[in-house]
Image (tube, rainbow, N blue to C red):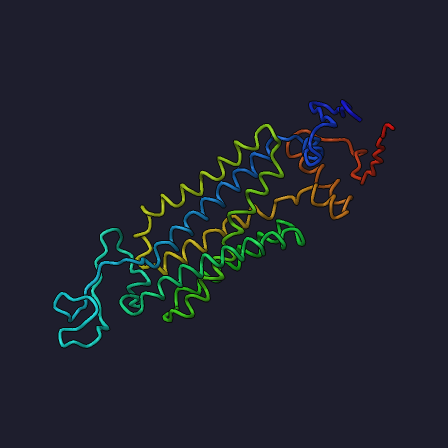
Length: 296
């Protein structure tokens, strides 16, 4: 097998290529399909950056505030009782944060910490859940379902007035937001050939940082932090339309032994790349016999 090469018009696939490269190389490893997938993943990561920035600014841990009736004190009224009404000073944004709305200061500051921790815990659980679901149901189904649930949990934040319920929904928002970031990177790795893969990954990941930066300039449009969270949670739904046209990986279908579907998808990707392949090409498992020669 060493040095063996497979030829088709405009494509040369070597037996020394990684196994995951074989099918995508036949359809064209860098063409219109790969460019469309990278653009889709760029938008998805940009929207994930907006979501991260919105959650990070939703509960500031060190706000500037004073007790409304405390004569300059922060946590005690002028008569010595515990303060319940606060005046907040925020020079960075006009957004009304959850720290202000729920008065998460003084003896209630621990709730602000736990709200952030719930989101971080959601990211951890979401990373494990996303991978297992993608392996079982495919990336297209997992991405579509998790994006929809992310939108749903984000919208529910609008009407929340209790910190315990807020922690519950922020946790699940973190669980589902992982998909918007991680699966597009996996899709790029699976779709783009070795020659352009690192550049494609860097370009996609760059847009996540751009989303975080740009949110600082558009956040005042929302007026309140719950409006900002709901807004950035709904935005990922716009990528559900192009997701309908996404073709599940031929490699995934081969692993699942869905060979006919894999052949059909491979042909559709090749046609989109204007590099059609012969209908005689079949996707089938290959058993390899390895013989070891041991000298005495």
